[in-house]
Image 1 (cartoon, one colour):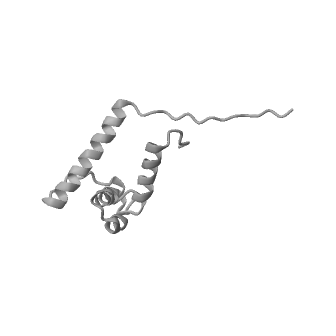
Image 2: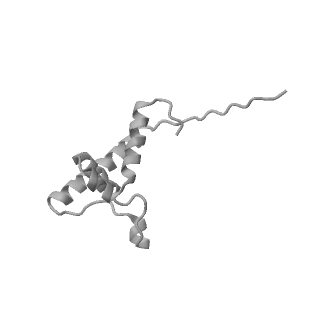
Image 3: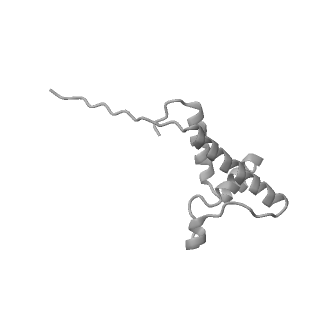
Length: 102
């Protein structure tokens, strides 16, 4: 007899505190980008990997890319970081589909 093993992925939901922290950081970064573009005030969150190593990480430029995407500038968004399109696709899938296995 063959035994059938069934694996189920259990996805933990974000708590209210985690959602609030992520939302707050997102709002802060978008406000910092707006102030940087309009006034020239640089109060954004720096990339520690770039500061330490001098090499850009895969997330570098993601905030600028997302901000350009919100403004509708696809070309500028892709120049900053092309992975923003993948991230937005994952976010849309997560919001639309309830049982995503990741």
